[in-house]
Amino acid sequence: MRAPRAARKPSLTPGRGSGTSEDMSGGTIAIIPARAGSTRLPGKNVRPMAGRPMVAWTLDAALNARSLDRIVVSTDDPAVMDVASAMGLAPPFRRPPHLSGSETSVIDVIAHALTEVGGRWDHVVLLQPTSPLRMAQDVDDAVAACRAAGAPALISVSPLPKPAAFYGRRTHEGSLSAAEDVQTLRVINGAVYVGRPDDVLTARTFRIDGCLAWDMPEDRAWDVDTAEEFAACESLLLRRG
Image (cartoon, rainbow, N blue to C red; front, side, top):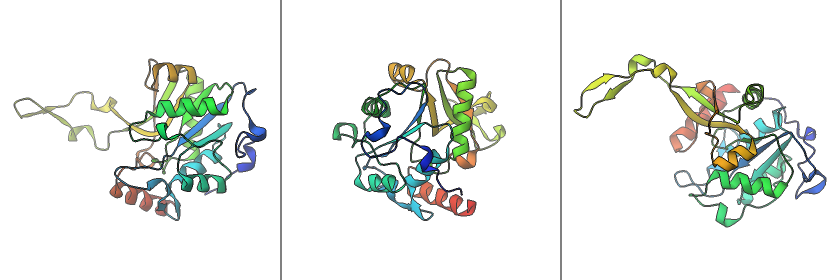
């Protein structure tokens, strides 16, 4: 694994610092939301995974992604703040309590972060810490695909885990019928979201008209929500070396 290239990011000082974005025009900003609470797996963002806090894997991917001009960690958790600061990504603000609950919309978190850092951005990228297997190249490829297509948004997806022959539909009577067009079905894996800020905030979702579905390898598309998923991702990271 490459060492993070923190020095390339000029805007990552605590507070606004010299990296204030009021006069920023264009470019791509990444938002990494990492609140303190977790219903199923308490403290999962800073829980050790393959030798480092889980959130560090996403921070590392962001730091090594060449497509990102600014990286902002949005958190209310002092432990996450410490991890991010140690990696050169000191949060420029502390997320307020009313945006730190389990029912908070991630769109509201993005809107708050964009308001806090200021500036105007061509694209906003959402990188959730619950996707620790996502790599910097995945981020760069997703941003490049969205730009090349001129799409308003892009969401990373994965193919269904089994061949089409393993899927069927249960009828109201309880019988099994064939499932049609399974080959085109995709799972939204939560690893990478890219969008034009105005479009995303207006629609309050990345899943808007013209949104691209961008295929990611299944082995890098895990979403951690349970202890079992955490253990599986840790095993895959250890195997990756």
